[in-house]
Image (cartoon, rainbow, N blue to C red; front, side, top):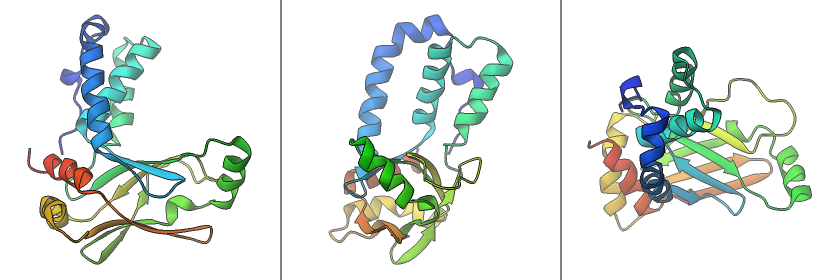
Length: 196
């Protein structure tokens, strides 16, 4: 999948002029790429457009205009864009009640090491993209890569059309077990990433 390049970015004024339309398109795109893994976890699969949006929003919010700082944002958010044969996702621990959330984050320590994707019976462990090993409670946001292989990525469209779910997110953690089928609409969005 293509990474975001400097030429993809709009200057702040030009971005402001198209922001509402662009933002609406990306919100709709993220909705197609998001699903609940459990009642506490959601996952959004990333691509070039979602990374581009994150960069443009960061430049806008922080009023970043220097080329080294722009390059830093590009490099940082390009880590979300999957390589060939890979899926990339942001996983969120979403618990509204603060006391419950704090307790669950402690209980779910090491969660990022307990997530896999199962494609047609083959389990592939996530590679956590967190820059540092987190001791103690887990974080509420995890950046994960799944190196499922080129053939599995190419087969996502067929999996979306199947009547039997064949792609699942699997969690095997002492405080949380789950095996959740990735919805067909999410698989279709992912398949489109590998056909363009």
